[in-house]
Image: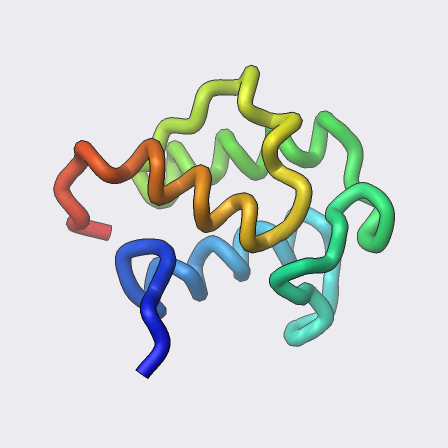
Length: 91
């Protein structure tokens, strides 16, 4: 069994769906190590929009100054884990 980085497969799936939607990617196109900027043509505005959707849809608040840390899906999982650690995992 693999260890989940963030509160379960359901949350990971929701994170993946939000990012895929914002970057206009087909299902399955987003990989855990693919660079948002280099491989998926993301810009800082799209990354800020992703952070905003995490807050609205998942209740996870990531500071806007952390946008530079969002380089790939694995970095998002790690950042969400860091900021959600003190919150109840109700999502």
